[in-house]
Length: 279
Image (cartoon, rainbow, N blue to C red; front, side, top):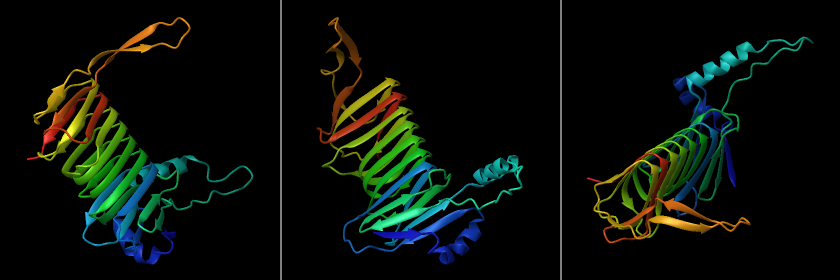
């Protein structure tokens, strides 16, 4: 495993950081020896994730702390006493993101300090797979071709010009996805608890669709052949001593696009679902 830290690349990054005039870090990961497509794994506590592509083979990882966050941090420090009753003085240390980047063959892992508030901007080769997770922040990806596993707990997800396969989830946030090509051998999935799902797919996609929204409508310009035979009341046995049964309504709808294929799942609790045909 080859670790990269901002300290080792501080001189190379100085000009960029000074030009941005905001706190941040920059790490360039050179091409690995593996001929396989790269996997970039990013996990953040607080902060958004943006991924874009370029024609080079390096992976560039940058963090940025917004000026609003910096000012907020300064105000919070100003409210704290500069000295303590016993004569100790507060040391105003620089606010850094604590970026950590590790490269192990074709897998690049990116982390920031748990209490950091930095967002991450990553530039990758087009053929790159992604595993992105953030506890608080939006996720934006553009132009990637690979396997995408996306999870934003509190924040929206926007994926544009994607090819390959997508598993995208948000607890509180909308999903907006546009796919140029879909891997015909693998499923795709889009789910959120509170938010709209808006997905654009290539017109020739073949899929078995699974649709569910508890509070919202479903729209599509695909000719989806619906199968309502599995929809309706479902009876479940209660394991309690009284032996009573519970009846619930299954709102899941099933159908096929272009004769069917791998599963394409769309599920939200509060929000509409829109499945669009790419023009």
